[in-house]
Amino acid sequence: MITISLCMIVKNEADVLRRCLVSIADLMDEIIIVDTGSTDNTKEIAAEFTDKIYDFKWQEDFAAARNFAFSKAEMDYIYSADADEVVDYFNHKRLAELKQALLPEIEIVQMHYITPPEFNTTANYQKEYRPKLYKRLREFVWVDAVHETVRLEPVVYDSDIEIKHLPKSLHSSRDFELFRRVFEREGRLSAKLHSMLVKELFLSGTTKDFLAASHIFEAVLKQQDASLDMKKEAICSLCHIYHESGDTARFFALAFKLMPDAVCGELCYEIGSYFMEQADYEEAVQWFEAACQTEAVIDARRGGKLPLLALAQCCREIARQVQDDVAGDEEQLKFYLEQADLYEKEAIAWELPVS
Image (cartoon, rainbow, N blue to C red; front, top):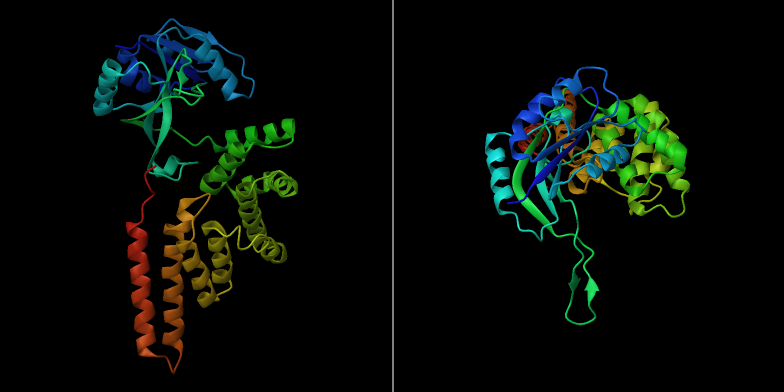
């Protein structure tokens, strides 16, 4: 049986920390809590479960804090958890069974991460795999009978364990500020951080949040080594900003800048929304249909549920126009009302995919 160190970084988590620890503490052989500046009774709650509580001066760097926590671990594996996570009875049992049977060659165990829709700030899935359990010391192994080489890729096991992420509130404002500070410090964001920023903006950002990050997206479009994916993300974000601010000329100039290479569900949905606001419902229908047929690269809803709802609304508006027309066609009226009902049913049935 393996041994496990639980490593957590916390700050002002008094409302949720006990809930998290009660759900997993008995499976841990060591509990390490790193506090980055709590002003509530977080550390007192942590002390109910462990005496390995450390202070770490916050450096606006979550990775630095987690590295410090990992450096204190001494068991075979490290389980990384956030204070707002919960392992329920059934998954507690699965984790206990995994602890008993995990093969020593496995270096990373992934678990399903589930966040309720109202707190989902970055994920495009009902649940997605995330690495949660890490082998503390990695062994280097030679592979291949000829032209042998050291295996560099970790051995990963995708488990059936589900972790519930149940935050008390969104942390988007904090994250947006950190993204901006990284950009100010380094002059750019990595492809990963850029993608996370854009996803968090589209899923939980306000118009003010978008505007505050506009200089980052403008810089990406000038960045010679930026990938097509980063440019797609930047174009979608700036188009949303221009649309919201009523800058129609810049909106359309940028929307078609990399067509057809940059076409995606988000861009089609944004253009469709513009035409719907102009009461040009037939043109809007074309773009919303394209959104449903085109992969979304940032927010899956903009390639599914949202354009479907918009299509239903457009069809009802077109039906109303037909009805108001003295020479309105009854068959045409029936067609658009039926289409509206169909789109609404599809929207209700639509769900985020499972990773």
